[in-house]
Amino acid sequence: MKWWIWLVIVLVAAAAGGLIIFDLVSRPEGTPVEDVEYLKPAFAAKMPEDAGQGQAALKKARAEMAKLKPAKAYIVIDTHANFIYLRTEGEILFKGVCSTGSGGELVDSLGDRRWTFNTPHGVFKVNSKLVDPWWRKPDWAFIEENEAIPKEEHERYDDAMLGEYAMGFGNGYFIHGTIYQRLLGVSVTHGCVRVGDEDLKKLFDMVSIGTPVYVF
Amino acid sequence: MCSKIRLAALALAGLMILPQAAGSADKQAPAGTQKPRAAKASSKQKQVEAWDPAAAAREYRRLQFELALAKTGRTYMVLDLDGGEVILKVKGTVVWNARLYIAPGDSGSIRDFVKRFRGDEDYLVRMVEDRHLFAAKDKTPDSILAIVGEVVKADPQLLQRDIPERFQMMWGWDLVLDVRTDIVGTAESKWDNTRLSILDALRRPQGEVRLKIRLASDDALTLYRAVAPGLPTLLVSSL
Image 1 (cartoon, rainbow over the protein chains, first blue to last red):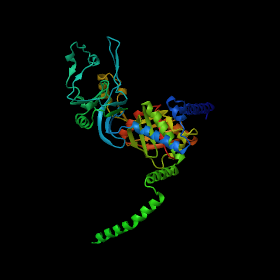
Image 2: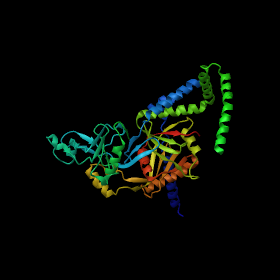
Image 3: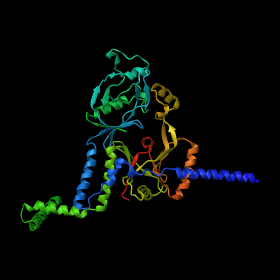
Image 4: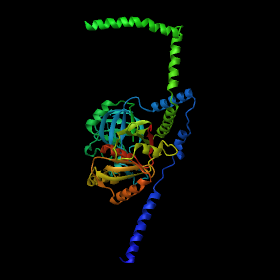
């Protein structure tokens, strides 16, 4: 074999080896968690050495943890897989397919308004239960359809869009029905949570005002 | 008839035992008002005797970390190797959980995983550093997503579309959780998959620890999408 072929082989092997070593070296080592601000109290906390005080401290920590958990069943909205649940810590009482926020953005070309259509993550509570709900269309609903924003209030109302039931969980967000049944399971909404007719009826009957709603 | 005899014998035995029990109680606590106090003191003594400072300190420490995570209001993951579960929580409440089916013989030992996770500093919490999707199956065809994307003014890539066949999450370069499902998908990037497989093979002799688990495809979808780099992970293990 000619010498230059050997040279090419050696150079290619050296380059490949270098790339692999670079990749190995450049992989993250791990975030130093002791620098994470919200974990600092946990790093600093020490259980008292005295048995009595230690038991009291442990009891207090357990009670603090238990206090965080809802006493009754709660709604969970899984925006990642588009499922809605009514569950307790150990049991799923109801599971249905839903649609959550698309993450899309809408900009008002005439003004400087901008909307992002996400379902907000966090902990909320069912604050209203409505039968045959009407939808008061906000400005973005008209802008999105390239329609003029109506001057008359009654022109904003739509009685078909939200299905037969709606459960509000704050800031204008609702769990409601939909006419777009085929899109259930896909993240397509403007932030509300759409549920199929049968599932919506079941869920509506199972929850009461005050039921916690966890969105993640 | 037989049961009547048995009942009578039991009643007789009860009559014989009762005065003895009362007597022994009286001997221990002569004054009637002293009885409850003595019983309370004795149970307290038992509690102190059963007190395992090391186990209590471990639980206390775990609770402190979990309380700190819960207070953020953001999602965090609990890898409960004792209970065999992977759990997502928000404010201390379970929002999603799935059983861990650890591939027998195929995975690194749980003990090694726990040891590496904790490290010299005895960490209970680590942040997910990276994740890699090996292969996935389209849930919604691109043609539909394109139409939906147009209607809702959203990037079709943002819309839910893939169910992971296999993905990895990593806490640092040498600690890997390999999640597999039963569905068959297509490779996201053959080149990246090959590159990562070669690197995995090279890292293994250097002490990389990998736990292989199997999940239902719906569960894997939630986990894959919820676990973004930076997600805190709390390890629960008595090992």
